[in-house]
Amino acid sequence: MLRSTVSLSQVSTNKILLPRNILPFNLYRELNPQRAHYVSSTKARISNLQNVTLAVSSAFTAFFDPERGDMIATLGETTGSIFVSEMRDNMLRDKTGRRILRERPRIHSSTINIPYLRSLPTGTFGKEYTNFLDGQNVTPDTRVKVQYIYDDELAYVMQRYRECHDFFHTLTKLPANVEGELALKWFELAQTGLPMTLLSSIFGPIRLSSKEKERLFKKYVPWALQCGSQCKFLLNVYYEECWNKNIEEMRKELGIYLVD
Amino acid sequence: MFPRIHLKRAFFFRQIRTKTNHIYNNSLQKYYSTSLRLQQVNTTANFSEQQKNQHDTSQEPRTHFGFKSVPESMKETLVGQVFENVATKYDLMNDAMSLGVHRLWKDHTIRTMAPGPGTKLLDVAGGTGDIAMGFLNYCKEIHGDTSAQVKLLDINPKMLEVGKQRFSKTPHHNTSQVTFEVGNAEDLSSIPSNSYDVYTIAFGIRNCTHIDRVLHEAFRVLKPGGRFMCLEFGKVQNPLISSIYNLYSFQIIPVIGQVIASDRDSYQYLVESIRQFPSQEQFAQMIMNSGFTIVGDGWEDLTFGIAALHSGFKL
Image (cartoon, rainbow over all chains, first blue to last red; front, side, top):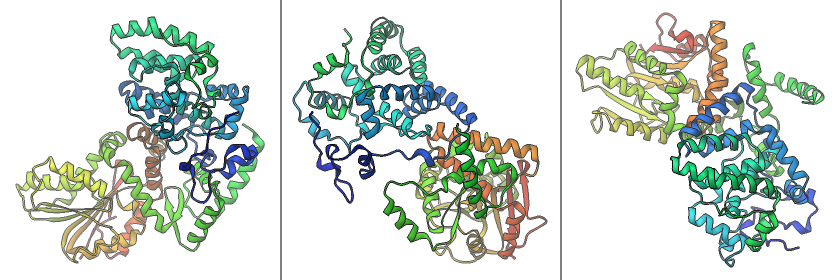
């Protein structure tokens, strides 16, 4: 099985990042501390009243100011406790999902080698991903860190879900404009069932024009619900090992078909 | 949750609680317990780094940073980071948190000060310049005076930047009436002794590491006959108001901080630092010990003691 190569940018202060295939899994995280980002057990918890107030106020703020990505993130964390557990259980049922939970890879410009991905041939997953990033002029570093989930593993699951958002864009070939984001939110609703996706899907289209709403609900939403519910649970994919794969093959394997 | 784990935790925390020397208010204990959890040994992945940190700071005296205990040298840096994070949204957050009442407190301070024409004011920890602006407006409106001067001093350059921007939109911009300086309230060596008529510090003194040094410097720079005024949060005596105030402080204010300023932790520090500040009586005693003469009690409670205006004269 092909493993991705270790890049020189992954050298930590005293030691080189040791590759996965020579270490037993339980030592991997300890000896590579920059991979184990979650020590949320020492964080002070917020009370239930604060949780509810935060959920309500972040929902309103996100609705009136859609640019506030951190408010949508907070809404997801404060409302999603049961559903994040379900997502984690879905990952545990799959072999690759279990490996992801053990190794806890992070998607950040320091852990993935974006210049290398740009150099890959067209049609590969890595190349399509960098095309998407360059087209939207974004980096994978813009994701807000999880703050309000206090279980280590669940916090990682939420963070992984957030970081894989750009991969969902690449696989479904949806643009990153308002329409594409809303379609992707419906897709994620079918996949994960998080209340944040439900609220965004219902209240997000309110601010669209009637023509855009018609297009969204006639074309994108049926596709998103059908494709999302029948394809593989996308958090169970080890994206860091798929850079060289042909993207059409990947889509076939995962059961994703594009919007027509 | 698992009751057995809770029992173990309860015993562990009882040990930590007896070792700390915080002065406890019974109704605040539930808020202390969350932050006591933070005083556990931090489970950093790099154990040798943690050992190095402990060795460096083990001999240093510690002070409070909110409900946490930190080495004294670190407090200034931590407070600096807090104010750097909140500087751009500081005024908006003040209005949101106090529902605009902070403007009444500051107006009351200026009116109690009742500056005459030509007064020289040193506004320490002035930050975004509320007191300084109120002072200049008072002199202009009440006395028609434009010879009053204020020096706005703050340890944080970002807060001072925001203050400069606010002043640039007023008629006091580019006049000799207002000067800006970056400086530490504990060490005003750039300011000559006996040079100011009034010294104010509004909602800043609780962030200083050594309050006695601040008071000593205040005494030095004031002229004989000068007035020291300190507007600061205080302790509420009324139990009903106190419980509503605690609930609002610990439950609502951090949420407002997260929603408006995307920074919950800075506002958590703010409400905790209010609880760590000495009471009105204790602070009045500290003012007297620095050589100031106080009139009556030396302080005036505002809004049931949520804020208090302290005053002392250098004779």
